[in-house]
Image (cartoon, rainbow, N blue to C red):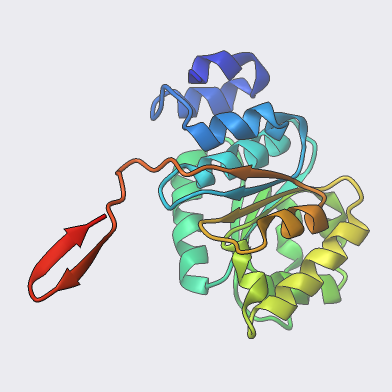
Length: 220
């Protein structure tokens, strides 16, 4: 699918940024568009690393922000990853949206976030913000959960599960975009999220599997 084929379906400012970097959508991106990504549908995207999952999230988040539907929150598992995503989004979209990073004191309600459009944070921090009843939470329209397979993690999983349960309850029409390279129970998770499953095996570089023994690799 050519990027220009969705030109009339995304904000002009967003298209202007994307056309400088890409001309064609990757398979998972095309599937997501056909499943209602641009119409606010929730999706669980399970595709290999470097297959284009982040752009799927960006399309949903930035379309929501620019069209005035509400804020977007991008949840990642680690502070370092949050800082990296913040820098990337700030560089790419800083001229058309207000981007914030919230990974600090979990005892703070961070009221300044009310003035921002796209907020990058961790599940622990966002969980704290819900417990502080931050008023701006009601203005969230899109929630992106990177590495959503960590729901099965014994340490981070419970916090993320409770957080998503709370968000689904207080945000009746929220669009949830879950991203992961590997999920064992993808169908069950998609059903719990009330999301459509996007599964695809395409990757930019073909993956070869083999067995290494005595200095030799036998591929199969």
